Length: 150
Image (tube, rainbow, N blue to C red; front, side, top):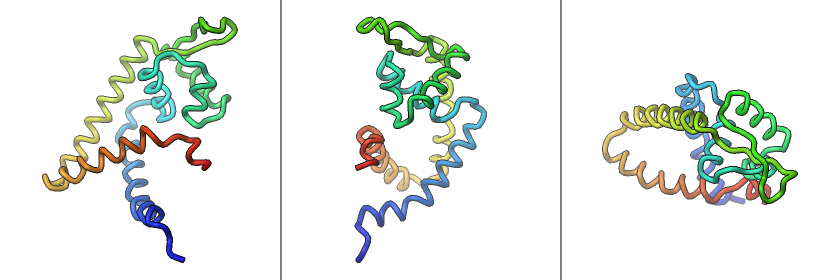
């Protein structure tokens, strides 16, 4: 039985993707925010205030993990808690102004690092990369933790 085309593609891209992932985070080591913290911050920036349960589900993490990450962000003044107006018993979290500034700073830093990496490629490879970026963005937008379980 031959592996499916999608499996073959995954097998082919995984080593390079893993190496780039590790390199990307090593280059971004000057930030003391973890990648899970940054994805939570980015979600709050894009979607606005959210309940912890929503963040946990959307990020594909357990509630205690989400609560701990949010607690650490709150201690640093990056997020703040507020009452859920639709359910006064509930609590939502949102980015503070400082949190938005910090997210913008780290995002710019990481974009600069990626730009330096891309600058090593010849022009025709940059054209190829532009096509792949669209595919990566579609996967990032549509693929959710729930789909991993299917």
